[in-house]
Image 1: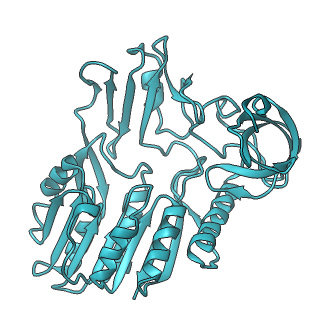
Image 2: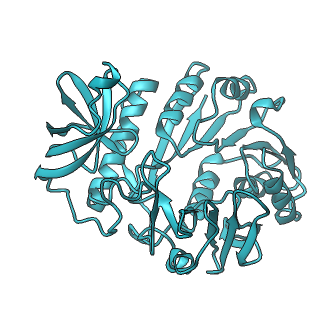
Amino acid sequence: MTQAQTWTGRRLEVEVGAVAHGGHCVARADGRVVFVRHALPGERVVVEVTEDKGGSFCRADAVEVLEPSPDRVAAPCPLAHPGGCGGCDWQHASAEAQRSLKATVVAEQLRRLAGLDLDVEVEALPGGLGDWRTRLRMVVDGKGRAGFRAHRSHKVVPARRCTIAYPDLVEEVAQQHWTRGAELDLTADSMGQMHIVERPQRGRPRTVSGDGVAVERAGGREWRVDAHGFWQVHPEAADLYAEIVAEWAAAPLGGTAWDLYGGAGLFAAVLAEQVGPDGHVLVVESSRGAVADGRDNLRDLPQVRFKAGLVEETTLTGRPDVVVLDPPRKGAGKAVVDAIAACEPSRVIYVACDPAALARDVAGFAAHGYRLERLRAFDAFPMTHHVECIGLLAR
């Protein structure tokens, strides 16, 4: 297809098929795949093609719903529409439908990439679909207004509020004028304290609110961490994941455990309690700020040792009893999986924010004789296509 033949801007009537990974559904037109946002499986819609680079597929938005799904609801956010804010994917779907869509995606990725046929249930976290996001980033448009990016675009959509953000967090910045082109980091910690930093394209960041140190509670401890570093964005997530790690790890007293991509050491604290003062817990984390936070927060646990560096560049030696890893969205990758498996831990607990990366790495562990024994999935990012999974792999 030549540039002159692009479908961009063209309107098509299509039957919407299955959900796909990434917050869209699959339709077909004239022998091509059309990835459709703002639609649900089984609907008949009119779409407008938004992106077409030729080849076998293009991207489109549903601009008119001819035959709606029974799962369709009115989007609670006025910016959740074609051309609007790109932060949410499923505001037009009921809560049950959102979890069902995500379960389908997780199961499909595990089947396609790891050869596993599993029944997947995505569990809801307390609090419902809104007011959950405690950490987010906004951008400033050419008029000094704070907003969010449109989907797959640099366009800034000004926002006065956000239905998924912690209450009043977006409202706090929406009424102010900001440096054009700046980014805004917004955090509300467990104490309800708001931390806001403006990061202009040139010059130094400016602290607008808070002292930059977030107080969080999880795993039976109080944590003081970088307000704009990594921490679970759903207020119920960190404590729940720590509970699951504690249940599945079963690290022996006096044993050895690794916490890879360990952040400030949330899971390391759980593992340290299990191995006791005569055991050993190694945390590997690339962020030096997170490592500093971890050392400060876990000073009472001398059995925990932090190592600053990339996991893929760290020489992993020894025979750990259990390994916990919480890699970034791209996953751990073959080299890390091979290195872990070579050390023959009895159990590996994998915390994943991307089901495709999880499935690829599960397949990698399977090649070394590890089997996925348990899997739990959580709707830790309601209204979006993101889903958190925790898997237990055993030799």
